Length: 318
Picture 1 (cartoon, rainbow, N blue to C red):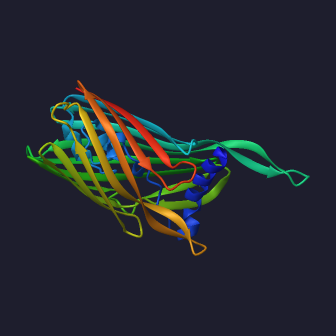
Picture 2: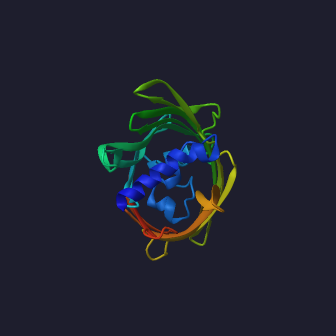
Picture 3: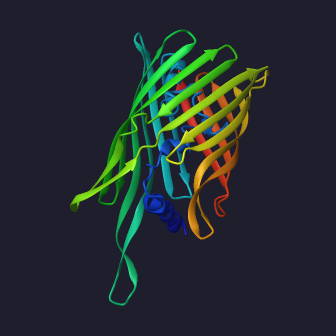
């Protein structure tokens, strides 16, 4: 059953072009860059760690000297997710690098024998990888600007896709209010181009979806309130998220949070596959101990077998 579920996840990704025509590339950043981001409602742009490179590169301004972060989890007991990042402050600004991957290992390639029975002739992997390089500088003490270049690489058996694009972000930090604006894949004409090892004439493309994300954070009496509007994809879906984060006055190293998020999903409605908007509730806790942060997030799900999702991430900043 686990193998079947993992393969179904892959099949949905692969069939998207056939279902909707011109397809958008699967953006692994939509999963979330850290357990902290997830526990406040998947709201992007306010990370204090190097994982900000996957959200809004302008928020790398929070890097004091050096920052590193790691986040890994497993979906449906088959889909492996990992991201790593690092950033460093220099006299010329903050530089950052990040790696992210989502994959399904050991997918069976089946064939039929003379008795009409199917068997696994061999196994292959699905891998969706992303590499990022970013640069951040501060125009003023309140206005911060960031740019990130992204390299996309997808591997499915003998098929490989490659693409490039750019993210641009702004962040205003004005006392109790922070506003984040980021546009991902701003070069809309650039696509992921696919080739096949055994078919020299094979040619297929996917769009790199333009994503525009507006988010804000407001602090009132030690409580952070978050809101976000995200527009993404060919259908220009509007996804809304809200979150809250509390650090008790007697334990500033502890953070308690909860949130609500919307996300795009594919559902079978009236015997047809249609793109719709799903929603989940999230909650979590964070610990910041002398520059080392630990975060945990819990998320509900509509999936029958995997109704409860748990996420952990760790980061270091000094």
